[in-house]
Length: 301
Image 1 (cartoon, one colour):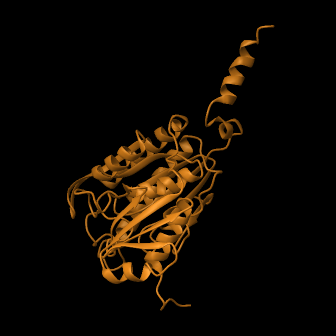
Image 2 (cartoon, rainbow, N blue to C red):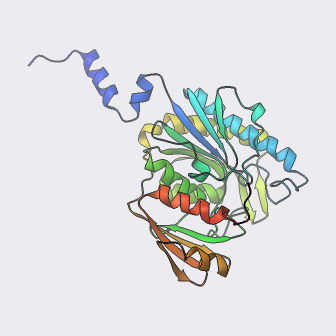
Image 3 (cartoon, rainbow, N blue to C red):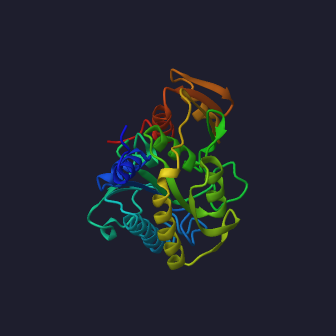
């Protein structure tokens, strides 16, 4: 058998390397999911909603952290970017400040919640401004999905932060999470679950409503750097894939939601304020969670 020419061997190795398919075609598709509690400087409701006196200013800071992520992604070769506006009413980002070639998902409800629009055509997912879970004893504004209504979310028995649920949705489509930003508790929590993804710690949690924070400019520079690093390492990072079927255990703050949700077929009441359901995949679980946290008979139109 004739020995292959060195250039042919090199081409074969590159073609068979995981994550090289899109790079070979010059395409790199990136999904960015953005929350607000993990943005630099955010510590209380003063920054997080329309009634807060700093909300307008912090919408700008959230937008700039997303812009930093976009810059880092493009520096790593990203050719297509979708951004999910995933805080509060889903209308926090100043979309006129985003590049013209970026698409934005806004408002609710969404079947895939904070990951709406992701599919198997994406190469990587990035989480910006994320926070720790409701069962984490540390973390600024730590909660899972709804601080007013939910005390714990478990998937297949594992307590989940929002980042874990969202990573599982991305993983369903074979997409790895490569980078997360937020406070130290949030970054450590998701790295423990997913492995050594890139993390941008933009503040250190002191208490539920206090932090030692980077300035916005410093946070944005760090995010830009870590996004680029995460995308450049994407071939070594694996999607977070849950074993199917996927069991959801949901603990609620109030008695009646658990009672009423248990009227639905396939939902079992497991305690005074807790329920369980099993979905064929995490996509079924996502739809159920969106229903459970958004439905009201008074909805109009």
